[in-house]
Length: 142
Image (cartoon, rainbow, N blue to C red):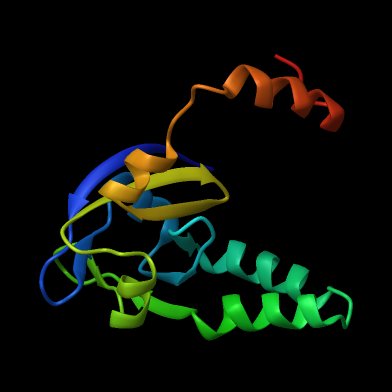
């Protein structure tokens, strides 16, 4: 399970150091793909297989095909170098607006990579009480 928040920088070549706590769980190679809300998603190989299995089982609707294309077309296998870095392809850097400062966020079975600016815009917890009330519909209580 991934959890925590880590700030790093991305260099001009698109290389970024993966937090050591995350590297331990991810292994030497893993998948990075387009995410939602303006970030990238990072999956261990095992979790990627679970995710892909879910995509395969979607109905044959237009929306399902679009979702499959979105995640699969943006996916890339990343390998950690000796300095603990990975190379984020230019297309993914552009999609997530990764320029200099980035934030890694552990979210259960995946990691999200955010530009610091986007993370600060999206991490507001002002309405968490209201959101938590709605989660009781899913059996989650606090």
